[in-house]
Every structure is written in structure tokens, then in C-alpha cells.
Image (cartoon, rainbow, N blue to C red; front, side):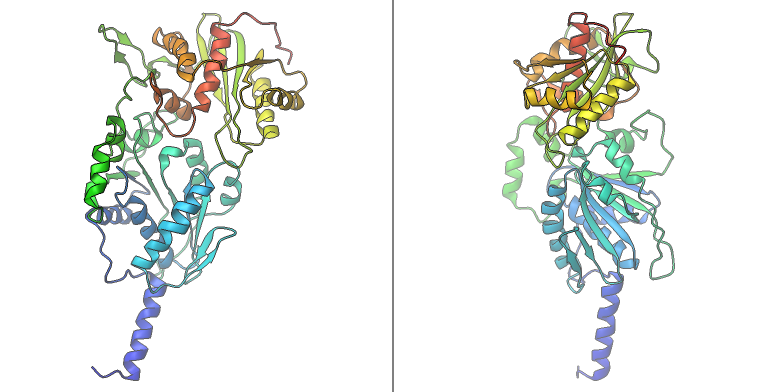
Length: 456
């Protein structure tokens, strides 16, 4: 065929169309599961979860769908997030995203703002990358988004998801004149069935109160390594050699009904001698009896508020019936001054008799920042001379006897509890909330009666 000026103009026009409207490269082919991902994204459900093993193409597939939505709607804004900012920057913004764009949209030129962590596509659409931890969330949630994609939700607490959803409100039109529907995509390598993704997507209930969700508002699919034809055979050998729990999670993509050896479970289970052991759900109450004492458990972390673990801050009480009650989870990730103020407010809100704080992180510094926040704060410093499991087992035994209750739902705390086994903690990060609850309940249920600090 002779190359004429008309053909050149037509080719340029087709390129401009592809650049502005996000037409995938003809050489790109989705896997069967990625095609199923895309089909769910085109459906009516506003929330779509991809759950399964590692290297199954979940992240690549959702990044492609975010780019497709951004290119189809000029001026739209979209969010790709993880719990920590450094993770989304290194794993997605600087790795999966450019690889996906080079593969699927090789003709699309886009600008990268590394300082503020967003890219600008043809038509002015923006894709932002950020962490949902406490130091970045205000900067991210100062904007409205048409799409959101929290990646690796096993590391993201439900409270952060609720905050993110509050900003999914951008009304924007596509090239064809229709409105771009609000969508949120989620993925993870599954953990235990106490995780909020299992309760919300699989069980179809709200994680915080167990009430049913609107029909058709959630959709999910399983994606596992064997669904990805691009993986080498040696990778499957590695997965096959993993311990049972890791193999179920990273190869088979299964939510574990119960982590082997778990000290707590959400639902009732049977002991080895056939006796029923109550689960956290059956011990949940809406109200508390008259209270004898209230304690705030504090598990400090080495975090400076930018990264690292949370500071566990849990309020518990001892009732006149002799039972323990979890009243509140105020855990956070802040600077020492910030979390000390949270502790002070928790104590004031619940008229606490005592603050029980672990001194392993910082020692005298922990007590100093607490007293700087409130000079009258009644503080008891404790030293973690024994391991987490050893400290947890006596409290777990009280749960088994039905003597500790949760006043409402504490999703993140309960997930940490159900991921704690006789062999140690099996979840991601550190069980800061659980540690704080253990310190408070130990003081109330086993410690000597302290003076009355109710005037605090």
C-alpha cells in the first residue's frame, strides 16, 4: 500500500483517539481471570474484590481498569492506595503501573509527578498513589475520586476503608457523554475469615455490626497463580514447598476458617474433649453492667507517626459481675505527642482508673510523653518479660469461660486476636491492638485493686 498524506492523517487521528480514549494495544491479551475482572468492573456492583494467591495478575488487572477509566473520562481523578505510602510508591507507582502502561497503552504519553505521587493522562485525568496510614490520609482525602483501588487489603484496616469511601464522590462524564460510575476495586491474599473483606464480600454483611448489605452492591472473584499463564513452572514448586497455612493463602487463595492453634475464634468451636468453646461473636454485648474499674491498655511502638507499627490503645473495664468488657479501640499511628493525647482523651472519655503502658519501647520516654499529655494521668508501667502468646493465654482462657465481652464490633482488634496462635502471631505486622487489650484486661482481671482515680 502506498503511503499517502491521507493515510498519514488517518493514522495520526487513530493514534489521538487511542491516546484520549484508552483503547488497549492490539497485542495485549488479558488472562481469562483478568477478563472476568474486567467484566465485573463493567457490571452494576460498585465494589469489586479480587481475592486469591500471589502473582495471579490481580494488581496488573486492576491497574489496567483504573487506567482505562481514567482515559475514558477527561478530568477524572482516581486513587490507588496501600496501607503504607512507601509500599504503594515502590510496588505500584514505580513498578506495576509503568509496566502495565507500557504493555497495554504503549502509545499513551503521561506526565509523572513524583513529589506528590500522581500521574496525569491525556485529557487531564489524574491517578494518585498514596498510603492510607495516618500521615498521608488527610492529603489524599482532601480530594474527591471517581475510582479507588486499595491494594493488598490484608494490611488495611476497616476504618481506613471507611474513610477512603467517604471521598468517592467525583461526578465526571466520559467521552461518549455518559457519566462514569463510581467504582472501588479491592484485592488481597486472603487471611482469616474474621477479616473485613470476608465479612463484607463473602458473607455480605457490614463488618462493624453484622447487618446485611444491599443486594448487588458487592461482587468478587478468586484469582490464583494457576490462572496466570505467564508464571514459570519453578514458581509453583516454591509455592508447593510452603508450610500448610502459607500454601493455602499464597497458592490456593483460601480464607482460613480458623488459623490452626488460634487462641480465639469468632464463632463457637469444640474443644478436644467435645465441649463447646464460645467465640467472640457469642460474647458480644450491646450494654455493660455497673462497672468497678476501667483501664486503658497502651502498647507503644517505635513509630514516629510516618511509618512502622500502630500504637495499640484499648479501653477495657471490670464489671460488678466479675466479667471483663472491651469498651473501645483507640489505636493509631501518630507521633509520641499525638498518641499520648489519644490515651489522655480515652482515659477521660471512659473515666479510667489507670493507664497500663508497656515500657519496652522507650522506657522512661513512654511515661514522660504520657505525663506531658496529662500530668494527673494515673500510669502503671509494665515490662514485657514474657512473650506475647504467654501473656495472651490467661486472657484467652477467660474468653473460653465466657468471662470477657466485646461491647460492639472491633474488626481490627478481633482480626489480630484470631490470628494469634500457640506458635505466635500469624498476621501481618504486629498485634498492637491485641497487646494493648491484654495489658488492660490483665490489670483488671488479675491485678491488685488500685486506688480510685475516677476524678481524672
